[in-house]
Every structure is written in structure tokens, then in C-alpha cells.
Amino acid sequence: MTDPSWPKPPREPGPWGGGPPVAPPGNTPLPPLPGPGGVSRTTAAATNPWANAESIPAPPPPPRAPFPGLDTASIPRIDRAPRWIVALAALVVLAVVAGGAYVVTQGGRKYPSEWDARVKPIADWVAKARKLDFDHPVEVQFLSEADYRARSTGGASAEAAAPSAEEQAQQDDAVAQLRALGLVEGKVDLGKANDTLSDTGTLAFYDPEVKKVFIRGTEMTPALRVTLAHELTHVLQDQHFDLERLADLPEDEAPVLRALAEGDAERIEDEYVQKVLTAKEREAYAKDSEAAGKAASDTIDKSVPPVLSALFQAPYIFGPELVAHLALDGGDLDKAFEDVPNEEVLFNPLIFGTPAAESDPLTVAAPSGTDKIEDGLFGPTTWYLMLASRLSPAVALKATDGLGGDGYVVYREKGTVCVQVHAAGDTPKDVEELAAALGDWVKGSPAGKASVETVDGQVRFRSCDPGDAAKGAGKVTPDLLVVPVTRTQVYDQVMDAGGASSEQATCYADAIVTNLSVEQLTSSTYVQSPEGAAKLQQLQLGCR
Image (cartoon, rainbow, N blue to C red; front, side):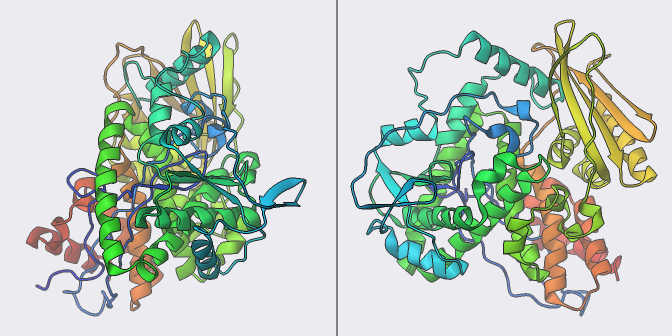
């Protein structure tokens, strides 16, 4: 049997164990989640996987997973974690004065009349590659290490004042809610996690609120140039599609705009690496990326709960595949920016533009006699990660696929923080599958702390904080997001190769994520081993 050659076997990215880090030393895409991006992804030349039984499509490389940070101002509505995932803090904007001529445009804002000479060649290239023109230059501030850290973390420092009593209470409630959902255990310092994610490993970021790019240092290394290509793509997006509206979009659309923005910027970034950097510069860039990615991984692993990394990496992981699917399907990327679809398309882009992508939000009231803390939409990403923390990812993904709408409320009952979520399904069978999955999830909770029932065709799930001494939190890592993204990648690459129907591609993609473990999907050797090749052939033949 020949080695699988279509597409390339998975490579191991930084956040997943055992492989070289892929995060470069810089790419901070845009607030509220600054964080590094990834090295250029390559794709093997496609052959027809259905032409003969020995040309077996292997799972594609796991998505790049940079280390986005947490915004200190408007986290709540960006990454589709419920709003309580991260405590809020005030954003401190540094007043950094830069020289140069300015013109006054758009609502009295002042913008430079020309690009910084160091930035202009990159800006010109990005505009041509993205096929959009800049309305005007923006200020690019080159900051000292200390000033950059202060800007990226909202002014936090090792000597920063302790949170106020109110801020600490908010953080305590947030951690209690995470414990209620089995996503963390014990005590968690959310403020420290926030600062770590905001600053670790980043070289630059674009802030759409103040319309400026902030740079760590002054040396124009290959890594910084690549980072600027990414950030300037965000500037173009903001000028044409208004990234500031993230905070005003419905909760089930904001994460999709976020993912579109990151996927689009990574696409341009990759092109810059391949088309502009010299071979020597690419080598230096890859070396710096590996070193910085490892350093970032080590730092984050020590002080950030894995669920926070997973939640805030989600747009960077889902985005490139959503953008790639739109391109393959002949979709209009710019139109998607203008008319943002529902969050479900991140898990299944095939429903883009169909009624299946529409869901009805549910309003959930706090039980009588309790104190409401907040309410909102739970969302597919949170459902999937919560379920997959205790169940198989395949079961979690199937349950998530059937969601037809949801809503949650957080409340305090006799001093204990609880979360109640109601969910509808696309079909009665979907309701049954979600209820069954939640029933199995509840079995992993401390006795009496969680329950699930089906009432009037809706699933009603409740879980309360078991306390900081309780054990049994589920295992949540960014690896789990490999599963839905791999499904999209396999489908797209089978269709792109030709020779297979949409039904065959769907069958094969579903079969891979159902029958291969996360460890196998992220392994650099499994799909090329005799065992892996035989498994892939078996799955392919089952879809003929």
C-alpha cells in the first residue's frame, strides 16, 4: 500500500503536545484578544482520493492555534464564551505622542497623511493582496518593552493594585460558574491569566477602537514584518467592514466576524511569508516562531487554565477553515463580513447561507427566590467544549450539531452560584441526543450538583458550583477544537480533489472524526503508519 499523500499528514502545532510550536513571536491580530499567529501552512498537491483505494485522504494538519489574550474591556461578546468567563477590568490607554503630519477625517479623528516609512511597503503589498484600498494610513506606534506591556495588558504590572472588592467578587463568580460547568476546579486567578494571555509572546496588535497599531520594539525583523502584514489586514477590514461593531453584533454572530477577521488575516500573512520573504528570511522566521511559540506555551501552561486558552483560541482555529471553505464554495468573503452568519457555521460551514444556520435564541429566567447575575446565549463553542471535557469529542460534536437555539441564566441560590441552560434542537432526535449526552455529563458531577430534563421539547440543564475543594473537572484543551475543524478540512479537500460527491465527502469527514481519536488526529506519524493507512482505507471504502 502506498503512503497516504493527499493531503499531507498532520503536523503538530505548539499548543498540542509533542510537536514544534507554530506561534510566531508576534502576531497579535486585534483586540480584545491579542496573541501570536502561526507559521505558514502548506498544502500537499491534491490527487483524486476516490480514483483508487490506495490513494487515501489523510486528516489535514491540525489548525494553527496562536495564543490570543483576553481583552480587559469588552471580552464578553467577542469569543462566544458566556459573558462571565472573564472578569472585566478598565482599559488603560497609554498616551504615546508620535510626530508626523496629520489629516483630519471621519468624525474628527486625526490620521497620518502618509504611512511610516518602515510600514509603507508592507501596507502597499497588503492592499494589493487583499484587493482592497486603505481609506487612509493609521498611526503605528513603536513602543518600549514596558510601554508595550502596559498597553497590551491595560496597564497591568507586577506592582499593580489588587482588585477592588467588587472586582474580586466578579472574578469569584466567574470562577464559580466555570466550576459549575466542570471546566476548572479549585481556585483560579483570572486577573493573572488575563495579563498572561494579553502579553505573552506578542509583537504587535491593532486596536480598532483607537485605530492604531502598537508594536513591541523597533527592529523590523522578518517576524515583525509578517506580524504587520497580519495587523494591516485588520486595518483594511476595519476600514471596509467596521470591526468595532463586534461589540454590537448579536452574541451568536460576533464570534463568526471574529473568526472571519482572523482567518482572512492569516491568509494574507501566509501569502506574505511565501511571496515576500526570502528563503533566508523564511528560515529565520520559522526559527524565531518555534522559539517564541515554545516560550509562550510554557508560560501559558503554567498560569492559564486550559479552557481559557481553548475558548480564546477558537476564532484563530476556526477562522482559516471558514475562509478556506468560502473560497472553495465560491462564496463571497466580503459579503460574509457584511452579513455575518450564525455561530453554527464555525462547526459546519456547509450550512452557510441555508436555513439550518438560523437559530432562535431562548430566554431563560432565574428561578424564583434567587438572585440573577446575568443571562445570554450559551453557544455551540461552549456546548462542545463542556461536553467534550467529559465525553468523547465525537459525541459532543454530534450533540452540538443538532442545536436549534439556546439561552442561559446565571444566578445565586443560598450563596451558591448556579447556571441554568435551555436548548432546542433542530429535530426531536437532536433533542434526544443532547439530553442523552448531558445525562452522561451529569454523571461526572458531584452528587446533587447537576441535573438535566426534557420539558416541552426543550432540554433543560442546571449545574451549581461544587466549591473550590471539589475534584472532577473535565479535561479541556485546545486539542478538542481539532475535531470540528478537521471535519471541515477533510470535506473541503475531498471536494477540491474532485471525483467524490458531497455525500461521500461528508461521509468520509464524519467517519474520520468519529473513528480517530484526538491523539491520532494530531499525530505526525499515525496516518502514515500501517495501522493508520489501513484505518483510513477502511473508512474511505465505507463511503463509496
